[in-house]
Length: 138
Length: 367
Image (cartoon, rainbow over all chains, first blue to last red; front, side, top):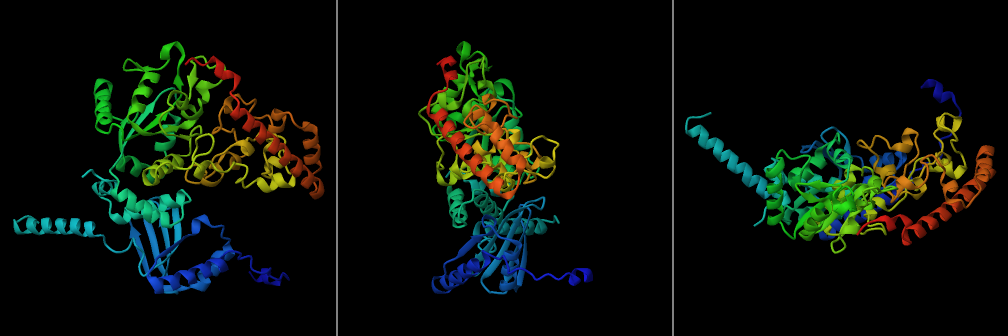
């Protein structure tokens, strides 16, 4: 790495062409979230983003307080960025291939809260387990 | 109430979260706006689980292989576990009369509502005798099954355009599905075979939003809206006039454009260059071979796979192109690219003409 430093190069201006526009879109979406509670989602997979674009996004949004791992049909990472209400969501398949990557602007991504039917199904299983215990099973 | 697709997910031990993830991934695959994922989730959660009948005629089972041999089975498997694949003679355990009975029962129950997937061309020659199963010819079978179908998805180039069975001299009088059935919506998912994600995506799209926008060949624009050439990562070499002339020359080693080696990318509409194959690993051009044009009608009969497009169109002398490309250089390269582009337009105009005028081969079909 020392050797590289001796090469007299001046880094070209950042080729981050699309990140600034994205950041403005995020700001507008946060405005809308505050005013009307409307959620917004940006599919990063469908946008031409250079490495510099991604770096700029990461750098500007920063790292937040919450990092979740969802294990359903493979692993998903749901991270709040340093800007509260902006979530970086990456869904991967069971063999680790990235399926989709998006930025969600909302209080909590819709995929996080437990669903009513899932809760009811879970409760049923819990009651069955309790009944089994009481009847002398284990 | 009928069982919904979400119910089917739950029965497979999957949560609503898995379902939402499936919708997000599919919307992304279909290049739909992210809001469509929510709309898709809402629709699929309330849509009765559809019945899918998969019929195979003159085909090699390559399309089914493409769909089921995917290394990442998540989405494809979910499709067929969660969406009711009621009949497929290759995949199902039942055989003989039991299989036929199961199929009749599934069709009767969902009459007028099922999705009919057809794989393979339909031979019309000798009264349909070239393809007979359970005493019924393919053409009679298709006519009957189509009557109860909400929509037909013609999977693979054989079902969509006739494919290899349709190729000259077409000894069995094979025709595509669209020549047998004219009163049902038909979605052509061409390719030899089609990309598995495309087959899955089309079914999910249909269930969520109804008929997709189709091109003039009846193919969904989402996947067939661009040519391979338009989305090819080697396109910059074409624009610079840098071509491989043999499979072992400097150009081939440098990964230059395969246009002069007969690549049919400029006249082929498919998603190979973006979705790629085997979980996004590669596609023919990335592996050093030109596109064969397998998702286009008559790809088998368009002259040699290795004959460059301009020679086939006959509009431009081949020497001009080779001269320009061989000289290389930026200035000449730009000229060659302009020349190549105008040839491409001529080729596109010609193929458009071919589509609008019936090919002479159709005369040999028995109706």
